[in-house]
Structures are given as structure tokens and as C-alpha cells.
Image (tube, rainbow, N blue to C red):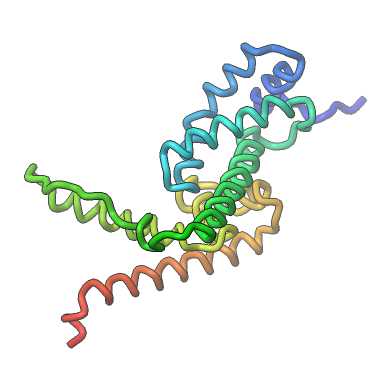
Length: 203
């Protein structure tokens, strides 16, 4: 007699099943296992630590409320990533709508915070690294949402094309295509920033 695929392949599914049955301790253990990874994903998607914390809590709440409706398939973190990415994309869409309808200086929100000069050894290199990351972060924020999700999952979260395809519900070919376009956009934005910062070098 054949057997159904075992959820023991990922104990998280068993914890989710026990959560659906009313076991709050099982859910606490599940959150403890996955919260750092989910929070990191939300931070990278949203670019804001406080907003990412709120988003991660809301994702876990969705998981808790719908625990009984999820069928075991693959790894549980794939399900969490799927919920997390969709939730963050919805937040980004709402954020963009707010910015569109806000009657304020459009450059006001993007103004960099004031940072006092750091005199410690290696401070210049650290500042350069922060500036490079800030440029990358701004470039990521300007990507179309579907390209942003693929880029973050592939380059920052280290997921394979197959895992990304499962998270986003698209083909592996679509993953490859979106990642290629995202990298091209990011490289073009960085080239544009470099040429804008040092116009004297072009003369």
C-alpha cells in the first residue's frame, strides 16, 4: 500500500498542522525558527526596518489564521516567502499610491539623512561602502516590483531558480528573464549615477 508524501521532510509542516489544531506552542516554535529569515526578506523588499517588522508580524498572523488551509508541499519557508513577498509588494503598491497623491516636494523623502564625519580608522572605506550600498538600495527600489522580488530572492536570499519559481508562481524561464532585466536596469542606474557624480572626468 502506497503512502502519502510525509510532512516529516520539513517538520515545519507538522508544527503548522498542530497550530491549526490549536497548539499555540507549536506556532511559537515555528515563528522562532523562521522569524529572522522572514524579517531579513521584508527588510530587503521594503528598505525600512520598522516597516519590515510590521510586515513580518502581519505575515505570521496570516499564516496563523490560515494554518488549516495550507497543504504540505516542499519546504515551509517557500510558503512563508510566498506570503511575505506578496505582502511586501502590496505594501509597496500602497506606498506608491500615497506618494502619488501627496502634495509635497517629490524629492523630500529621498533626501539622505545627515551623518556627522566619522574620524575612526577605516571610516572612509566604511563610508564608501555605505554610499555604494545606498546607491544599490535606491536602484533596487526603482525596479518594477516583479523584478525586485526575483533579484532579492536570487542575489540576497540565495534561492535557486526552481525555488523562486515556486515562491512566485512563475516558470524558471520567467525567473531567469526577470533577473536578467533587473541586473541590466541596476547596472544602467549605477552607470548613470557615476557619470552624474563626476562630470569633470568627462571633459
